[in-house]
Image 1 (spheres, helix red, strand yellow):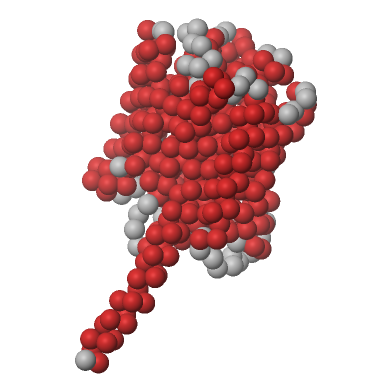
Image 2: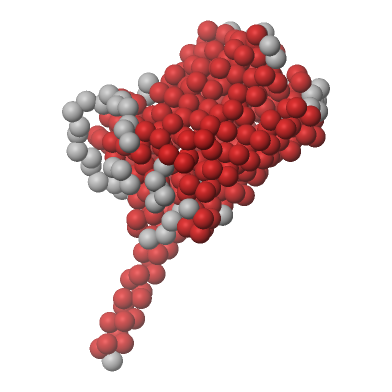
Length: 391
């Protein structure tokens, strides 16, 4: 009887704990959804923002550059918040302010104001990115279950949902502020529901300075792969809608669906990515993914037209899906410093890619700009053999 009673008590105590872990997993996944939906919302309306603010293609590039600069130079702010207050505070602050920034972008009266708003968007998005990934690591440890790839899949789902909502909103109203205000309201609700279920993290020891250091050895190759991956992924999110509109003649309703094609295949691949990485290994996923993404997009650009573009964008999503989960998981094996450096190189790629596409497109056209996305994807396949087989 005593043994049975102890066993029953143990089971009763473990049930709430497991239930709490499940709620935490859902809460962290919701934050990934929030960030993906935020990115997808403003990225899918770039053609409308370009028209509203009377921007050239190069000016759109500088607008995207502002977001990337905000993300890269947010490192001291992000590190300070994590060290002093923890990842829950990082998620709460960024999650509360990101929707407000989205609304501010819709009401931006001129180009300089939009630049300032996008700088702040980059800072807050970086803060949420670091906070939610820290929560993802804590949740993996607590639940003893690999979920990082699926969390990144939910991020892609957020981008897909945002693209579909953007396409539908064009039927209801041409006013960007109506779309962004509704999106912001949904994001605030999602953050409010999620934050109370996050895991408290331990205070981090302060380090001597927060400067970025170039990684060495395997971490360097991981950083370069992250750089190429974020160049390609960020450029696809930011330029696909405009490419479809200007190069294929897609309507305002069809143009956002390019992001949808890209996001849905990335979501599917990331959803199964954890098991694929165990079965095939990260090197095989990165090598094959780079070839699929780069080769598929190049073929679509050569053929031209709306339908080939949809297929090409879908292949890019499929090929790039493994990059972030594989690279960051491998970097974590080399310690916190390597992970921070690789993450920063990823932010630099997100900074470089979209405006670089804009500058090339300004001098030629968006087809040549998108060709750089294909080149970055192929570079992933070229760099992957430099990794150790146990990565």
